[in-house]
Image (tube, rainbow, N blue to C red; front, side):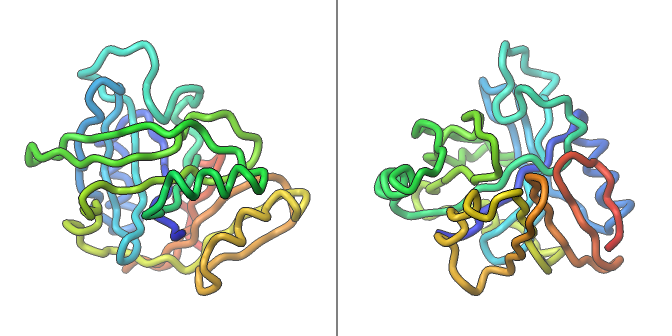
Length: 212
């Protein structure tokens, strides 16, 4: 499995896209609408097949529950991460056997800005969890969102922290070359990026785009 993307929540998508450009010199590309789910997104390519997803309520959709962001106020910053697999059904069984908390398998899709539809299978990201275990995704037809994105930044480090190292055993599923740092402390996830304006740290529980 590989790191596929990170999820950054915001209350106003277009305002946040402008902020990323002003502060970090990154121009997020509008992704499209999660039809019937109440959200829309913008994407920032970080590596060959890894990206940052900015996700926010879509004011044009009136739904009871907004996918991915229900239970959040829009001020939490980095809230989740997702790993990619080509054998999601098999991996779910393996991961659950290791004690990993994963949601039910579900189908997803998004209408892109050009009208095309991107589809996937994933474990329910809204599954209640107490730590930062990622959810899983398998893209359909071999099409990945990064295929049409320009790389504007790079990942320097992914930092995961938990009070008990045993709570991070799921990290053993990642390739050893993943730029991962493990820390002992309160449960947390952060991402250190490098852009033309320098290095920045994005983290959970904080909307600040702080230099690093």
